[in-house]
Amino acid sequence: MVGLLHKFLEFSLPETANESSRNRSRYLGVYAALVVVGGIVAGILPFYFWLSNPMSWDETTAIILSQIAPFLGILVIRQTGNLAYGMFAASFPLTITFTIMAWHHNGLGSFVIPWYITIIVIQSLFGHRGLFLLTGFNLVAAFMFLFIAGHFGYLPEETISRDNYNWMYLISLLTSMMAIVWVGTSGLVRRAKSKEILRLVSEQAEAANLAKSRFVSSMSHELRTPLNSILGFSQILKTDTTQSLTEDQTESVDLISNAGTHLLELINQILDMSRIEAGELDVHFEDLDLSNAIASSIDIITVQAEKAGITIENHVVDELVVKADRLLLNQVLLNLLSNAVKYNCPEGNITIQSGTDGDGMMQVSITDTGMGIPEDQIGYLFQSFNRLGAENTAIEGTGIGLVITEKLLKAQNGSIQVASVVDEGSTFSFKLPLSTEASSI
Image (cartoon, rainbow, N blue to C red; front, side, top):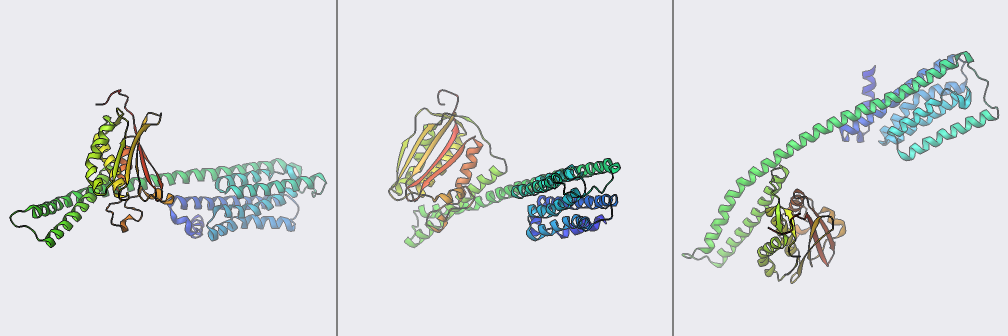
């Protein structure tokens, strides 16, 4: 019987319940709560009415409502996929059922009042805020109805002898407490199972991601060897003085060299990414003079900037010492300065400024005068291989430079922020901890 009931509950699950094991467990938990509560109520009512006079039409209605309420809730959940709607659909007829029982037995002093509390508890566990308040409103309306009926003497004569009152109160309290405890315990058990499933899935995902990173790293190393050979041979062909290349041949070799260089850059960045994801990034903190690090990076990027006619203005404060990794900091600066050149406008400017934020952090801002980035696209800047449409332009890039930059800064206890105005330019600012040393090394 239990197996058939479980199969029925699984058959009644909506499609949204199968989105995850946690979601499926939550739906089954609500279904089981509805069935158990409905079953307990359906078992109590015949016993209650058996102690009274022959059942009236409203008492018969109460029994029928108590039996169909859980299945009505399950039907609503299956059709809508919304747990809150189903809980409300089940609680509404149960509220009517308990009100009918209270009507026949002492109004507000009825033994069925604990069952109103049970409805509130179940709704608070599984329901929606708005429908939870609506359920509370229904219960308040039932209380007011019973109060008014009792106050003006409209309640029917009690149909259960006072000798049975204690038994009825005891049965009501015990069964309502049992329902609350069962629902709560079931929810905790299913929640614990869901957490365990999520933990196992997370571990499997981490293992798969680590294997992927190691595979990518291995393949990148294998690709880099023949690629370096191609680049080397292209350089030899261009510098061979014994047999000069024709103009067409030189153009072809340049295309090979440029494509190879771009591919090598992509491979190097993928290697950096896989190394970071695999947890193999070695960070060696030391006290670094920020102005020296920026000056060195500007020297490297100057040739690229001069070709585009871009002016670099360095306003970095001298004697600002940070706690960082020398190689990683240089890579961060080169990535941001290179982007500021590539995505700038012809004859544009790059401004570099620095300062402290008062919280022991140093901030460097690199501002360009490029096309800018729409505000609704800034959130996509740090997604791998997302170039925000730049892949359709002549600007070369891989789409993972900023992703690597963000991860490198996090590895050094830093962060990065972006501000941009379309047609005016962008500012990339990053923070790193200030050194406690008074002088640079």
